[in-house]
Every structure is written in C-alpha cells, then in structure tokens.
Image 1 (cartoon, protein in one colour):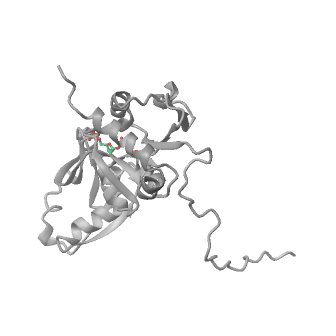
Image 2 (cartoon, protein in one colour):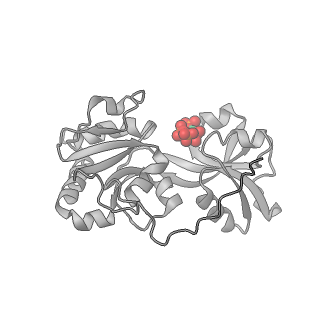
Length: 245
Ligand code: PRP
C-alpha cells in the first residue's frame, strides 16, 4: 500500500520570483486601469473629453478581452474589478487608473498618488442593519459587533473609533444576505440609490464616507516616465473643466 505523505513545507524564499518590476507592459506602452461596472459607463464621456478612445469592445462587458488598445498607440487600457484597480496601479502593472476613494482608503497603498478627483461614481460607504433591529446602531450597548463587509480595514477603523471591536465577516459580494442568514448583525457596504438595501430588508444607519472616483498614478512611474504621465494627467484635468457655452 502506498502511503501519501504531505510534502515537507517549503521555506519562503527571501527573493520572490515574479517580484514586480514596476515597468508595466513589456512592450513599453502605458497602461490605464479602468474599473468594470457602473464607473466604467460614467468614465466613457470623461475619457472622450480627455481624448482617450478605447477600442469599442472595451465598454462591452460581454467581451472576454481584458486589454484594449486606444486611439493613442502608446496607451492601452485594461478592464479589471473596481477593487483591483488600486492593486494593479500600486504594483506597477498599470501606471494609471480610475479608482474609487473607498478602494484607495481600504488598501491605503503608499505607492498611489491621486492627483485628481474625477467627480464620477459618486456614492457612499454606509453601515446598514436589518429593518426592525433598532438596537443595532445604539453603539453604547456593544463592545463587539459582527459586521459583514468587503471593507475590513475601513470597517475595523470606523468601529474602533467608537470603542467597538468589529468582528469582521469578509465577503466579496451579496453582503445584504449576511444578516438574514445569521452571519452578522450589521453590514458595511457601498450605497448608491439604496435600492439593494431596501430590496433585502435593510436600511442605512450611518454614513462612513462619501466617495467619488479618483485618477490614481503609480509614484515610481511618475518619476521614471514623468513627461508622458504628466501629459495624461493634464488631459484629464482639462477634461474636468466646464465646457464653455
Ligand atoms: C454595490 C453594492 C451594493 C449595490 C448598491 O454593488 O455592493 O450591492 O452596489 O447600489 P444601490 O444602492 O444603487 O442599490 P455593485 O453593483 O458595485 O457590485 P458588487 O456586488 O460586485 O460590489
């Protein structure tokens, strides 16, 4: 009989293969990371005003392609999850990105520089509780409370400021199910129209932060390719100016 043994644990190497080179695309193109979903739609007219026109299937979310060329031969865009834009830019895979202030605050990457508030993707991060649970937001009654969220850091910090230990249930979507299925007492989630909360028997009890999307830039790339990146920032800045009547 063959007895399978667990392989001996491998000591982590001090130098990790595939360490980010902060150089972005191997063909030398600049990469702009765009978030999928609702922000992508509102980014389209802003990109057009900035003179950046991605190939047409970039905005077609049924397309499985992730990298697209633009009308600028030196610039490609990639389409990633909104939560991953900050990581792609901070790790140097993309030099620029459009990123929600919520995502920036959650990860707090020192490598990210956010020169412009783009004024799109406005919504908020809020605490919500089930309809009828009137005690849930009487903070003085709790020293510890279980909260489901995709924002563990923002949530921990928010409750810690109130002297409450947030016991985090880390989910990546469908947070609204957590209270009704007994995973948590509260949720912390993005709220825009409020219809998702209402449809799932929840209501907002506190707004943690109002958010919009920012243009984010990798600080190392800004030093190594200053002219190209400054030119792109300037295009976005011009695109935000009011259009003359
Ligand atoms: C967000 C959020 C809520 C919903 C709120 O999800 O997590 O589910 O939007 O919007 P509303 O207030 O207009 O109903 P999103 O659609 O961004 O997808 P996600 O679940 O992948 O985060």
